[in-house]
Image (cartoon, rainbow, N blue to C red; front, side, top):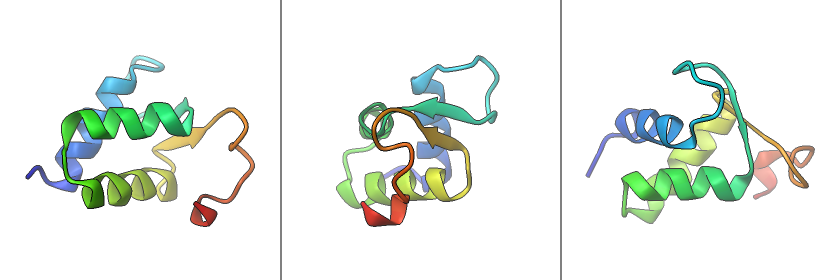
Length: 73
């Protein structure tokens, strides 16, 4: 099982929005979940990584869920 940091870095690279690593990215929740799921098979790690990326501002949601507080997911 990959560490959450490794999973997060791989997911950010998989999203490929913007170009520079570690810059804030905008994506849909579906794109984010798919990117994280591509680098881990552990559902718990997917949820933890997605929440961490949203909490830390590494990723910002776009689309219909952009204004919904992520803790409501």
